[in-house]
Amino acid sequence: MLTGVQQVGENGEYYYFHDKNGDMLTGWQQIADEWYYFATEDGSMLSNAWQGSYYLKEDGKNGSQ
Image (tube, rainbow, N blue to C red; front, side):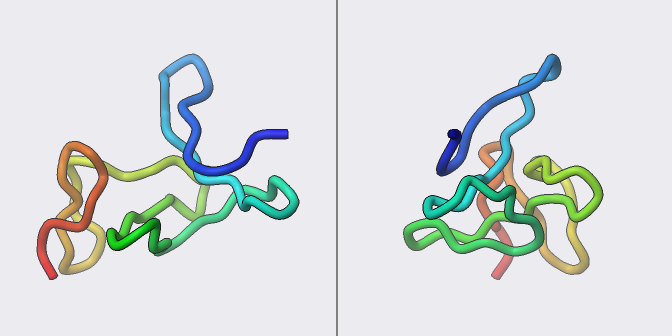
């Protein structure tokens, strides 16, 4: 069972799996002290992109709080 942030798939996308049961989490997720956004359509982590009024840096971290 995958847990935590994992790089999977043909494109090497990152996904976040819940530690308790391995469910994929989507939307805004706080990991340690940083915020990330995982697409509600497929669960992939956004990077180098805008989500609403927030810019997500290359590493996926919210860069515009």
